[in-house]
Length: 274
Image (cartoon, rainbow, N blue to C red; front, side, top):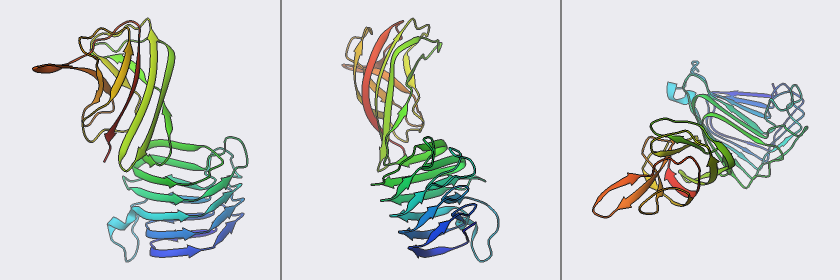
């Protein structure tokens, strides 16, 4: 390992390099660490590897076993992941364990990849939430997100799936496009989904968004071939990732729009996630 950093707080690294090692840098049990204009090159695994742990660290409280306040500012990852292209992060890999969290900000960073599918960033929130904030970066490879991750500053695709609230059923999709991004704790989505021969029953529900809403919200929609009294709006409830279509009724409770064998929903909306 080039640099193994454990148990460090409120410190900065300026214009440092770490080349041709197993990892460029590993960080655990840290808070308030900043890298300014640092680089990693030709390492076997991740350029920066962030790993949470509940292992004891002399002189630090248990709370510090999370990794918070890590900033990569103007840093560069070049041809990392030599040992297994597409497996390791050219810039930064964040891996949580033991229900410990990690918060990382990357600002003005850049990468050059070794192979087509080499990821620039990997976030694997198998245990413990990862919050990653990306600002004005030029990343030459894909970003991998899995598990409990809130990734702000970059749009992601999702596959909207139409199901019935009583019987989920299945259908054939001719269009199935979804896109979302997170800014300032607000998730904004757009979707266009067209289906035929659906067997679901009950109210229309659209699944596929990966993050739970922390507050109820309503968006806007245009629909085709659905039965309704007033034009429905997409709504999401607190604690849910699923979207329903709700019709406002004068002087009465809103009514959910029911499934049809074929239809189209073109919708957009936003909701808080923290």
